[in-house]
Length: 131
Image 1 (cartoon, one colour):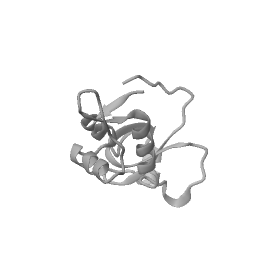
Image 2 (tube, helix red, strand yellow):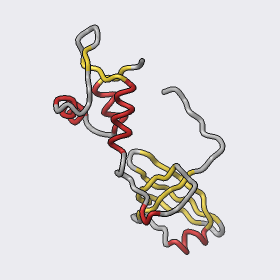
Image 3 (cartoon, rainbow, N blue to C red):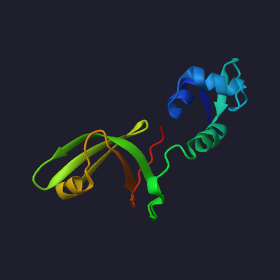
Image 4 (cartoon, rainbow, N blue to C red):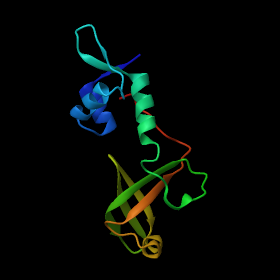
């Protein structure tokens, strides 16, 4: 079973190392000592904590009924429009999502920098790399 240092866990959770220490000291996140005495978090416990922490954080607005299970609420950071197509960059928490849509869609939906949107991703191919 993999284990993570405080710094690694902080990076995965998008918080500071001090926040991870406070969560551990408060009993919210279980830590153990490794063979050298360093504090570590087991991967299974960290995954469960991340999942619990994410519930309700980025709710899909308006209760939209959809078959898409991968929805990311974020803020538009860039819009590049040409005659037919548009590229929309969205910052969804620590993740950047870029979508190619029609110019007409951008205009009809009023998509511009600073607007909150929901990026929905449905794909038959998702690549997972061991990081």
